[in-house]
Image (cartoon, rainbow over all chains, first blue to last red; front, side, top):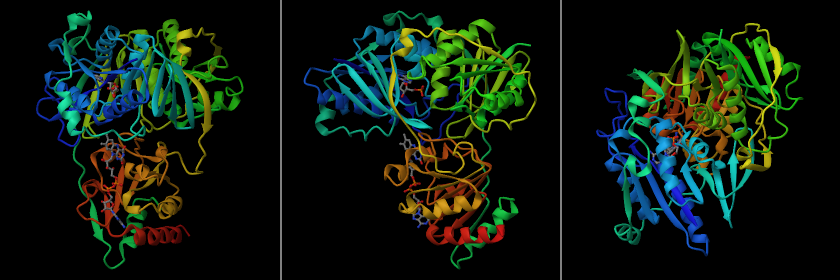
Length: 261
Length: 321
Ligand SMILES: Cc1cc2nc3c(=O)[nH]c(=O)nc-3n(C[C@H](O)[C@H](O)[C@H](O)COP(=O)(O)OP(=O)(O)OC[C@H]3O[C@@H](n4cnc5c(N)ncnc54)[C@H](O)[C@@H]3O)c2cc1C
Ligand SMILES: Nc1ncnc2c1ncn2[C@@H]1O[C@H](COP(=O)(O)O)[C@@H](O)[C@H]1O
């Protein structure tokens, strides 16, 4: 069986994130890493691999700049078998429409029974790519899984919606996206880190997957950012100490002054 | 005037408040046309009247008996067929897990650009200009769709619902759902128990508790009830199993933008701030005066929440008389 896990390389969320003058995300000035939310689908893929008697190949796929190979390496250290990195100058600035096209065409070139994604990327965090990929690949999508069960070509997930908790099922080939409730992701072991050095990583360009330059990139995006503006920082209001036990009264005074009581 | 399609969000026919916000926004862009997907019973007089009251000129009703057991894909097909038929200026969908997936699929199906999580949408000539809040609320971005139909998902509280009687002309739509859309089958569904409190994403007041509660949420709940607010939690609380995930606020939980947000025993990590930073008034109670959340507050109390909250609850109840 073959599992393809889509992982994104993102700027560190705890750092100060910026926009470039062309309104794209500054990916140079801030350290990057494997999106924490994409560790979860890697984890689920590895758990399926460990449970199966048959051989399971876990391939991690990323679309991103040169440094994005760091994201692949981390996933290989966790235990994935091989990596594919689609990197091409022309992809820079693509919106979700362009990125989903590149990912879909790359997936078509890979054997895939299961395609796994995170719930959202920690930078753009649109959370739409899995649905777009499913649409482009014509795959059924079991999205936002907080639990994944795989058994002989059948996948069953638990989906915690706003109004109900659902059980959703599908058969391979199928796309699954998982949430951060799906199970703690493992840390790479020393053995894993050493083993990752020998694992194969292929680098593909747009021509390798048959996508032309004018289908992707900032200039062909289907939506356009007109302006970006840092939000004025909030100014800190009054902070009182509760040492003498007056905190609650002062809090009530404040709430009353703002007409909340 | 060209139509603006609004996908109606409802539970068994009860139209959500965000839907009335979408109808209000739709009027800025063109002629609001509601798309109601549900059973014939769901599309009852109350539901239709609400849509009409908030400005729906047209109401497309789609009987979903044949595809109710499938996940979002059929709904995207319904909208795609309508987009084909009426070439609307825009399609507005409420930002939520399901809404975003529908919108993503619709964008691909119709060859249209997509903007998610708008906190405001304004008309500008023939196009819709959106405002988004990104990077945990530290940036504001204005954008528009340049290709195809503008497909926009809009966050709750992006507009104040305004009543404006529409014609509400009803039109039943027949749709063909492809076999492909039936691949993800819902085999069981357990409705969530209602807490009896206001819905978290829509509430005007939210009281949230963090790890500092030590799992004792009674004082959070009682303070929320005194103020008529909803209860929320940080991920630390959810991970510890103290409160259900559906109450989590932040990057991987709900985004809230209430009039008043009160955090007790929450440090204010960037991922938590991502979900509450745009609240109008922010209050924090924390025993550590260095807690990062204090940087955002309009009012803060440095103290132990276990004594401050019960006393504050009593004080509020007393003043309400
Ligand atoms: C990818 C990713 C996504 C995430 N998504 C989310 C998310 O959606 N939502 C979210 O909340 N977090 C999220 N997190 C986790 C986030 O980074 C923090 O770990 C989390 O918000 C911490 O919760 P907390 O503030 O309750 O706990 P802590 O950071 O432990 O803070 C507890 C606070 O309580 C105070 N305190 C303790 N006792 C008392 C007392 N008796 N009275 C008053 N104050 C007291 C302490 O001083 C401290 O400030 C995410 C993390 C990652 C990596
Ligand atoms: N550039 C990318 N390369 C590989 N996978 C991606 C990329 N962008 C998004 N994804 C996948 O799509 C999911 C949702 O991303 P998004 O829609 O951007 O929030 C992520 O969790 C990843 O699994």
